[in-house]
Length: 281
Ligand code: AMP
Ligand code: FE
Ligand code: FE
Ligand code: ZN
Image 1: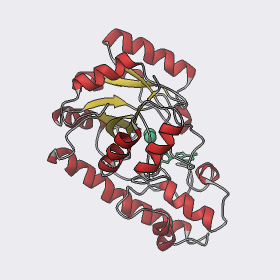
Image 2: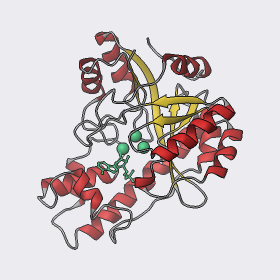
Image 3: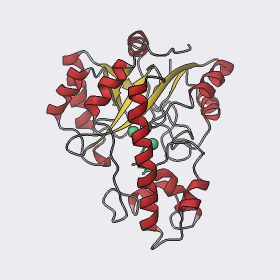
Image 4: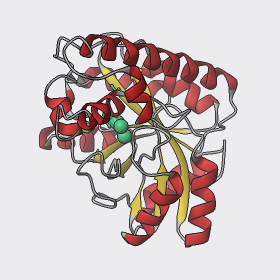
């Protein structure tokens, strides 16, 4: 069983529609796929219909952008939550609005030195999708400034760049609580992705677990080896769900569908804990 529980479509910063993503997953031999776009779930319906047509399993999910009190970036995966739970929707709306004005500010700064504009970024963003630096990267590629997203993230879009602007987002402890209230299963995405920047210190995991954190994504290409060992010990001590996933973004990243997989026993635990929406398998 090839079970991939973390992927993006063009509802956020992936490059394929939810239906095309499902088609690519079926082609890659994936048996069960979760769609986890950043901060919204409008791709679920299209993904579910495509999965049913293709005969593969579908798990509805989302990846919530969070910032810890110390300003550390945290991504929280949510599976099977109620997509209409208003308190969670309110937080997501705040984040998406902040993302939009922050992206405009980054583009404003970049436009002083490079031939890009907000209009050009919008040409590379599906209407209604969660906007992020990857869309700005696509505009920079089309303007001939860089050759791909990776080059943009290594230079002008890096968090250390002088063009970088941050944005407010929900605290991860609050996000864990909201996901649980919405009947969802909260799983910490790539918790030890140290190459992306500062990671949450070991002592802070306890607070997340007390708030209701269900699992940790251990098998992800961005987690360091030492980080994975720490996470395995933590999962064992607290009986956490362990997942493995690709974090596929279409042609926007080198990550390949099914490059990491989740054990069927762990998927079973997610499905039995999630009560806010349903998996089709
Ligand atoms: P943002 O959410 O706007 O801060 O941008 C972060 C997003 O950019 C993450 O969700 C990643 O998927 C994506 N990203 C980060 N680094 C890279 C990279 N080197 N190449 C392509 N996409 C990246
Ligand atoms: Fe992304
Ligand atoms: Fe992420
Ligand atoms: Zn992701």
